[in-house]
Length: 323
Image 1 (cartoon, rainbow, N blue to C red):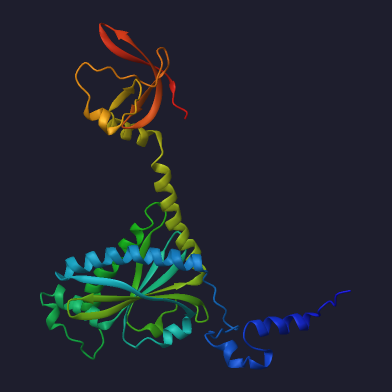
Image 2: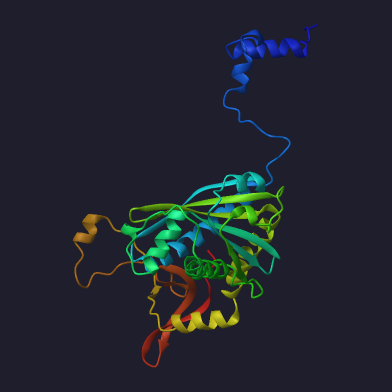
């Protein structure tokens, strides 16, 4: 009777086949390439949520790039630098004491998101709106004046409009600027221990490089993405309504197509074809009285019956071609 191997013996054989034994495996080999994981603060954002959030940010970035280019009269490029998850207190502690921050309320989800703009971008916008050029923009080491805050309110309100445009499939979704805060330490709109998604956008406007950062509490990510999905679903549904079909048919009614009736086929050699003369008779592979294939733009559509109508040759369509 054959000996039955134990599990340990099987493992040793597999290790030998793999080119080593258990003793050859070092702890460093196992941990190589591994990433540290904090079990006290597990990641909440799933891969699908991250993908949807990235898609939302890409659409918003294109709107902002077009708006900034028109406002500053210069080429603007906006790219997504990172999307990270962290406690709000870590994010807040990383900000400087003087920073232009817009507090945006989104009515449909009953939540608040924060928009931070780096100071170099803020003073570039102010300089340009007051008639200067972006090349002459400076970064003064002082607090923001009331005039500068008022001017930047226009910019942040326009950004809110672009955010709202992405939710136009939901009429109740309104993105409104609550206020502008110049010191992040005074913002109490988000709980200090709240887990937030931090989205960093790199903004390049000519020689100027800065960042715009969006801070979204994790509890509002799903409702926020739900608004985008509702818009997409409504757009797709609207495309198959009767009214849309009628409009499409009106556009297609004037389109010409080639309709051909194939009486039959014949196979000839190249030599036979070269010797064809007027008056020659070709024997087709179809019989008299058999259905005739009718094609539309080269696609097989109907079976028909040849005949004569009003002294003209005609084809009567009998049934659809079913292969």
